[in-house]
Amino acid sequence: MFWSLVSLLVLALVVRGIVFAVRWFVAWLGRGKPIQRAAEDRELPQEVRDAARELDYYYRLKGYRELIGKPLKLSRAQLSLLAQRERVVRDDRVDHMRIGWYQVVILFIVGSVGGLLLEQLWMFVTLGLTEGRYGLVWGPFSPLYGVGAVLLTLISLQLRRKKAKWWMVFLVSMVVGGLLEQLTGWGMETLMGAVSWDYTSVPGCITKWVAWPFLFFWGALGLIWANVITPWLLGLIGEPTTRRQVIFVLILAAYLSLDVFMTLACFTRRAERDEGIPPKNEFEVWVDKNFSNQFMSHRFENMVIEGHGK
Image 1 (cartoon, rainbow, N blue to C red):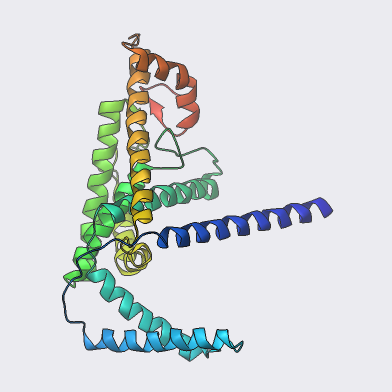
Image 2 (cartoon, rainbow, N blue to C red):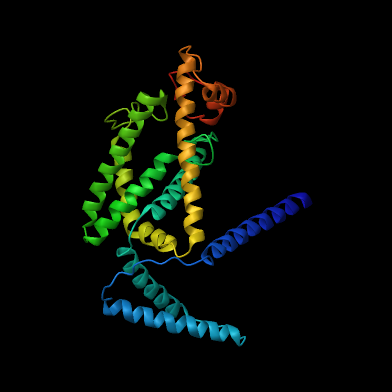
């Protein structure tokens, strides 16, 4: 019992340390040399100007009260009003944000990691499975979810700006999700000889990689993504303000590009090894040595590669 409590305490300290380190690093990135961007010249709606003015007053007052040692205490109604004002300002900023490679890279990473964790949690809760659901040879990434996050964000942002009805968002999300699963599943089997999922035994199956239950899931996810996740996530990501932020995301993009390239190379060599094709150069020799069939089967536990089980 004693050591269990000690372990929990150590775990809590480690988590707290990680959170502190992440916050410090994000703050450090924001303190780099500023970059200049062309500001959009537009007239802010009166509601947004009023909300921004109230928020500015609140944060100034909060800082002053903390400085004199008398922290500001708000009632539940005041906190609710404050959150509403923050949403007004955030939604206006997000609806007029210029989406570029910077946001796309971060969205891909967040979607890849978050989707992987949710899928593994779902498999554990529903089936008791603890197998890895990784999609790349390095890192906790599932590119299907990363691409899905990027597409859903870009499309839902356009639908938000056009004030699309909820049913339109639902239908568009169904189509996007279905096409993504179809193209990804077909591409993996055709180009890489790998099968990561198979819906042929699922009621409502349309193709090997598309089924009605999952289309409805994509539709529901699209609604949540458009109305909740997109404004929150893009508001959190924002736009780069320092060179440190740009360089860091460039490094992440380069790493992901290398990860994708190595994954394709490893699957290609796996298929060639199964066909008895020897390596043609030093790079393929290195791939065979470091990414053997055993490694591939252990890394991609949920996949069937070239029709062979694990």
